[in-house]
Picture: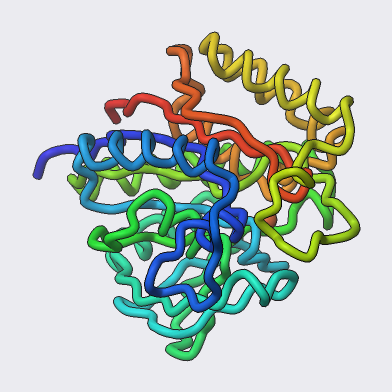
Length: 295
Ligand SMILES: [Fe+2]
């Protein structure tokens, strides 16, 4: 069998506002407009994903938080209603997704063999987290590519950021090995924002863009620093700064998803393509693409 391949990597944040503003048939609330720069950025990433022709999308979501090890979606089909716990007024989404269970099992097994706790999630009534759903919708609204969903193990909260980095590197090695053995064309996705300070009051009209802006200049500076390093192909420096960035910008990289992505891409030295950057409820969100890597 041929060796598998990572055909694309991406940072694909999951503010539910982006789905809300797009008005897809799966989402119940209706919007007039909103967050266009980020939605146009996703148009670019969608085109890249279509062109790369992945057979599977492997994604880590900060909102599937598991406290004992990494969990992997383990049934071929999940269907249900996802309601955002913070913004039920914006996101009530009927999801219907397919999972590549053999690849999920292979990554899970490889992870366990490297000494990390890992488990398949086989509960048919499990409600898929909105991070997975929003990122998958924004990448591929046709939902015609099966996914592998990986939980975010709360290592940074239980131990510290250094343990998180080491753990994510190990998980990335397991991911690479399993993809190589699968013989498939795979896209790998980290579903997280960058700086993550939220606003504390909501406007009456959520898509009122006169209210939307970053709330802390220091956080903006941190986002620009990390994005500039990505643009210059300096992923190792992104990793070196991850601890300080995460703590000082209260970044959603505490999930480990971006660290896992960069290690899975073998710490890229080629420039990342920045499709766009924008604020959602004050958080910093970048839609970023890396070229694929041979395994
Ligand atoms: Fe989030």
